Length: 90
Image (cartoon, rainbow, N blue to C red; front, top):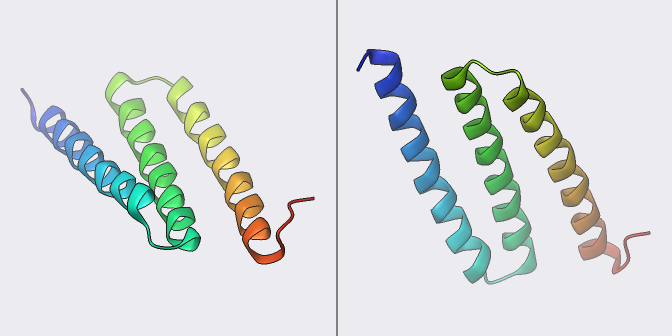
């Protein structure tokens, strides 16, 4: 194995651990704000994992999927923040 393959594998393992810790916080967060922050963290780490997979497989489709993931994650975060502040989304 070359150095790039080892670095990519190590990065993906660390991202998986980070996502597991974020999921733990998502399910056991004491407040709703902690859960929203954990969800934001999980989708950002998921986006980073998609970008690493794009480098690994040399595919542009992963870049587009990462862009869509961040777009939908941002819209979801804004909707949840508005709901937590006002009690309504629309």
